[in-house]
Image: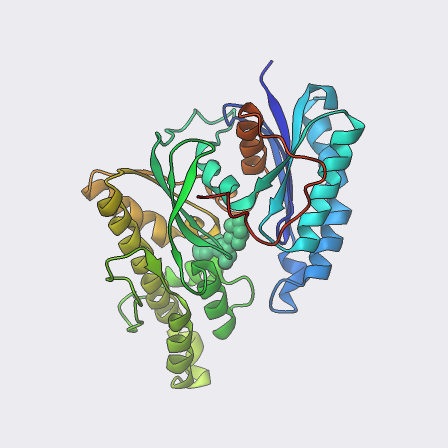
Length: 345
Ligand code: KG4
Ligand code: ZN
């Protein structure tokens, strides 16, 4: 019998439960997105997020077991994301995970959400043949709503941070722009869709820090330049120019990301890379990164979109890796808004 871990993800506004084996084979994964609950407020409301996790989590655990025909006695450990994230949201997943572990006499493992995104490159599903997986060491670019971080991944549990944004995350830059041009929240996927009908060179947006020979990134200036640009566009003209605006803005974000990834490969001479996190669902980033990888002899791994955005399969698999490395958590460990200093050193 494979080692099966039940994973719980509640770091922000997605509730998710999954069961994954120690090869990264996903037996079951269900996710409940809360976008509709938060959209009216233009951003995630922590109180609403926590309440929603509380409502959805246990029925999702029941669904995982009834769909797979597995029993709790088939599960080796319970893993919950316990950092970084919204503490109220994390608390729901942590308390649910620990309670299940205590009732069923199982170990509990607190998982770092960024670590989980990094491990999403190893997930596969029964109906899909096992995808090519990155070989260690590889570079992992975590590009999400909260993070734009570059890591050197030496093994499943030895990960070193080598670069990061100095201000906003790439997803945040896309979400803020989406809100600014009236596409609502979250804007990333909507900007992506709108950009498909536009010209990437129509508007000149800056690419701050992208040509600097370091692994620092910056996205906050982009939003300010978009605000200035939009102020000069007549409101009634906005729908007509929106595809060009989205394509040009998205291109600036993608340029910064691909340039920094290329510099990271040059600097480390590591030629296997993965791009993970919600923004790796972006169609332009996927195609531009693939083009760059093909012309530079780099092995590129990007998970399928359902594993790019927040999900519990990546948490369950990371829990499985930590379990194998004897790194189960103490029940006294709680949720934390930030990563631990020891996580990526
Ligand atoms: O990893 P994720 O689901 O949650 C965090 O950990 O933050 O990432 C969410 C981010 C949001 O900023 C969302 O707008 C962005 O991923 N996103 C996209 C796309 N789909 C989701 N950004 C660009 N293009 C997409 N297709
Ligand atoms: Zn995430």
